[in-house]
Image (cartoon, rainbow, N blue to C red; front, side, top):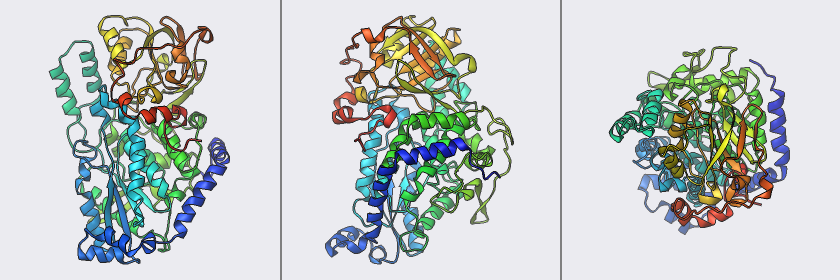
Length: 603
């Protein structure tokens, strides 16, 4: 296995550390000061401690008051409406039981909101989706603020939830901290069938009954949705960063192996608390090397574009300044090593069966594309190249074989693409990102007239009225974080897919969002500066010729934008929903998409 780190990986990592020096030093100093306080329980008054254990039974009370044992905080995103989070219902009791058997204790420190983007797509609730990440971060930090804990277990998976929990936990980065995943649902109908029926419905060829039957066959049981969207990208990236047990991201809910992994994570973490001799802080794990390893796994797997927001925000929470240029430079040298929908027909279960995260990481390490000296929460990075198995009732890790499915993870010394799945775009329309791993080469260069809209609902009406049956670049402006919370615009994808299927050139340009499920349409998203804050999309007009060139990373128009006044669209009807009525402070204070679209850590 190569020990030579690729020079670009080293250069980007050094660049991140150099630009972050003052912030990182300040963050580490705060974490060190927290650690030097020792076990926080010992600094609490008798009244503080009495409140902390008042609801506990006698045995648990004694374990918590015993300063030699671990008291583990559980921060849960459980609700029984999210399929991915429904399995968490029994986790607290399971974790408490196994820790108690070994003389430790656990308490549910708090719960965080967990909304489902799949339920809110195209609905008013979607306006709150990105806002929820910062609310979750605050809720996580508040949950840990009681200072009675020696370690943290985070129960969260989806979209904004897991990144929010990590951002909040980094405020208490002196604590050993790990995610406890729950795993994906079993495979339903094929992704190709999903796309087909959705496009048929958008074209009026099938009715709502057929669409609903298809969707219920696709999303049908507890567990994470099986396409490679933001939820599963969270799991893959955080495993690559060493924030969960090796090989644990995509083991099915309710399986014996999943139960063993859950219990093992709790016991390992309890053995790593301060004073144990194996103390390992979250602040050590989320450093520049762990961060870059996560970015490389993101790019090599063709992961969600949402992580161009989330990883920037996570980095800043750890005192690190990450830029879109870092994503772009890494993407030039990191090959695409996974084909999971929307980058191919397979789902996340097929990826797991082909070798999963351990095989992906091993292949990256063999190419010198990982920091092998990064510090994961458990063991060494080499341990993350092995897969968990049950040998009788005992949990063990074994070497992962070569790919079991070369259509999902390529065989040795081959790749699906020489560069990663994300590309930075720049030009006189602003800066944005495009997910190219799912876009055919012939669709990566588009020049066409603009059609301007201020909401995805207006695009839908124009399509139904036959106004978009032509070469067109659909521009959806005033959908950034400062306008209405930056909703995902997936309602557009079946529509634009039908336009492309009819033989027309089509692309999307927006200051709004898509995610890991963005599909085969070239989409320049997260454009910054956003229109609501004076960005150039607000100076476009219908008919302006736009060029989107993914290969060269250019996004521009020949129109004389500087001579025009910004558009002042009527937002009172289409965008007067929850994203504008609530979180007004967020919209005023939020940073740009390029700096994480966060209300935290602003200068």
